[in-house]
Length: 309
Image 1 (cartoon, rainbow, N blue to C red):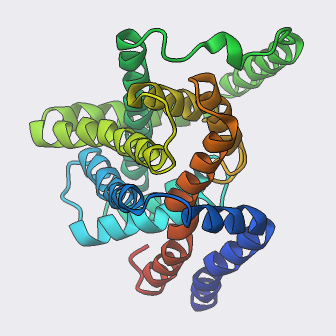
Image 2: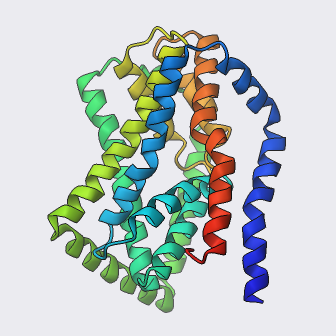
Image 3: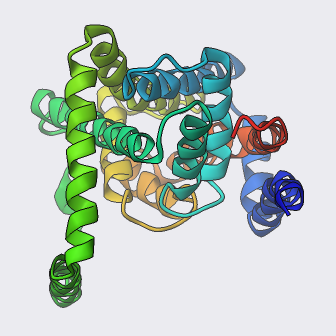
C-alpha cells in the first residue's frame, strides 16, 4: 500500500501541472509571445533574482527550527514546495511538503507544525512590514481610493465576520479542541523562544522573511524595466506588496488569476499604462510561476521517490 501511494504521489504533481497548463494555455502563449518583445538583459537579471527566492525561503525555514536541516535538501524542498503551492489552494501545498520534510528530518509533528506556524507568521510580518515602511517613505505612491469601488457593499463583510465569530466560538466551546489548541500554543511559544535565544536562527528567520518579498519585488521591478514601464521603482514595490497582501486570503492555487488581476490594477493605479502593465504582469508570472512549475513538479516527484519527503 505504501509503495502504491508513493508511486501515485510521484505522478500526481506532473498530472496537476498538465491540467493547470491546459487550463491556462492562453496565458502561457501570451507570456511567451511577450518575452520576445522585452529587453533581454533585464529579463535575465529578473530570472536570476527569481532563483534567489528559494534560498531565501530555505533560510527562513532553517531559522524557524533549532536543529540544523540538510542544506541542499532544504533548498530543493523549497523549490518543490513552490510547485506544490501553485497546484493547491491557500499555501496548502508548500505547507504539506515542508511539514513532511521536517518530520522526515526527525522533528515531531508538534514541533514541525510549530515551526511551520512561526515561518508563516514571520513571512506575513516581513511582507506587511516592508509595505508599511514603503508607505511611510512614499505616502503618495499608491492612491488606495482608486483601488476601491465607489460603493463597497458592507453586507458580505459583516456576514463573513459574523460567521467567523460563530465558528470560532463553537470550536472554543469544545473542550477537546481547547486542549489541542492550548497544547499547540505552548509548543509554538516554546519553539519561538528557543529560536530567538539563538541569534543565528533569529537572523536567518527574519532576514529570510524580509529577503523573500524583497526579491520578488525586485523581479517585478526588473520586468517592468524590460518593458519600459514609466513608473518609479519604489512605486512599483508598493504596488506589488499591496496587491499580494490584498489577495493573500483568496483561496486560489498560487494566487493564479487573483494575483494577476490585483497586480494589473495596482500598476495602473501607480501610473502605468494598462497595456504595458498587463504585459509586465504576464511575464512576471511567467518567470516566477509558470517556468519553474514543471521542473519544480519533477523535483517534488524525485523527493517523494527518494523518501526525502
